[in-house]
Image (cartoon, rainbow, N blue to C red; front, side):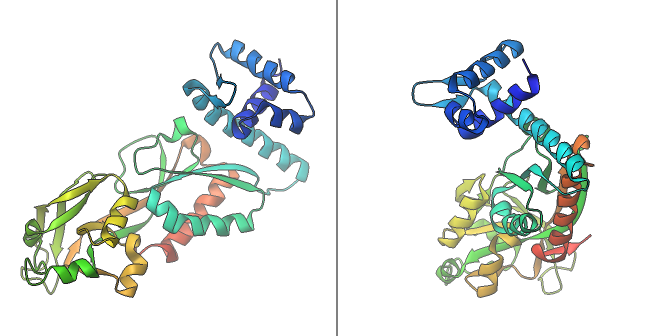
Length: 313
């Protein structure tokens, strides 16, 4: 058995969900494709595909193997393409991970621009607000918000995005006359807050007094808030705010357009909320791959210069 060819066949079977589709692509037969996958399963001593009369899908072990196999197949195709073309045209799959809202609102326009320039690149975008194991999932570049734990991953800090306390204007109107607009962090205990549980601090919100605050500049206050809704999804948190369901403490980019239009208002403007660093991270083995390096440089420049409300580092 040609292991590489079998791996390529398996990758295409998972991507298309069909033996017959791969058979048509390769000019083979459905039976030959099925036998190739069966031979690969025997060599690996594991079932890669769950087969029924109506569906074809990878098993749990098959999904893990697929993620690694697809990356390897892509790297080989890229290397062969560079040799044949005699130059460094970027080709093949690029696996990118990011938080959901950041990916939807800020990363997708940048991916569009990057793919317009590099027509040979295909992008697999994984959006998840939870922890993603880059090596296990075969991720080349991930965008992460917040401080990073020590690890073997290669990290590049590109900018710092600020957090803000916000509410929809309809919710703000409903605060009058009681409980009224919050004037200091401790007032938030009287308000219904939407808590994002993806933060390590969860419902402990920290603010620093600015020039217009009632306390001396630099005073730090942390308040534990409560509310009827908490979520691990930034998309749900954003939607809840736009529905007027309460106040929240969020990265400013989530509501950039709505803040500019006045639909969403910043509260406690004289108190500075915490900032979060934005990092690009990659597994060490991927950092020097041409397309990974070029894509990372592209994101770093665009995120730093004009994509997030931030402070430059």
